[in-house]
Image (tube, rainbow, N blue to C red; front, side, top):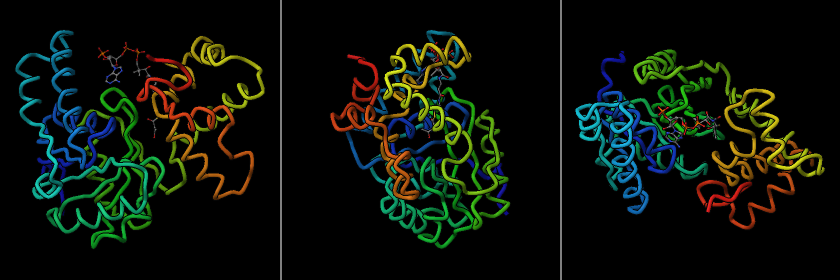
Length: 289
Ligand code: CAA
């Protein structure tokens, strides 16, 4: 039986925005963390982020020099998934939302990782039951869903598909506790899990108000910040989470329902086709250049 104390080494597959922040958080919280990516450029960017972030934390007095140095020594970025996963006790995949890619990665991880290792996906769109049968350990394949920015947002959704064992859920929730995150147990694999269902309905309303020219982007954001106390308005938040991801999710919903109301909003499509994906491309609903 696996226990939380057995988790010493965490592997994160994917060093993009979510992957490198999850990795760094694990390292700060005391785990040996091995983060891998197929792109050397992405790995180099992630590595540079770690230095910048940790020195910023020291300057702000949030970490001591020793704590920052210890976190730095616990995190490694590496191109080989074989090296990153071979001694892992818990693996978190955070690659693109492409089912075939995830299934291939999980099949490889199943071959590489020790038999006791739990294989989690950070996917917000793909439930683990679509991936689990690519491995020989479906009971240990689970959704562990972090929120953006993962270093800051406390919530993690632990989503239990029908194939997932109680032990895997238990250890995953205990891991969240060790990471000083607040976990919620999502007992069924519903699309969008818990929070994204709520956020997506808010985005949809905001896009509709804009498409109908009821109010400007700025005013819709202002309304949510100053009227409802949200930390940021829906358009600012959508720029953070990514217009590309929103487009893919909306299209997926439309394919499932066939309901034209589920199609991506015209204003969203306009930005998507121009490659304006939000903060990460320098332009989205707002201009960051
Ligand atoms: N990476 C790491 N740390 C960050 C950060 C980032 N991108 N942005 C802000 N921070 C940190 C800052 O360093 C600061 O830390 P300390 O207080 O410890 O010094 C703290 O967050 C606050 O930052 P700021 O004062 O600069 O800015 P703020 O008060 O406006 O907070 C925010 C920024 C935390 C992002 C806040 O606006 C917020 O909570 N926004 C809502 C975010 C949200 O809803 N996320 C969920 C998205 S949905 C999702 O992720 C699901 C999915 O599947 C796509």
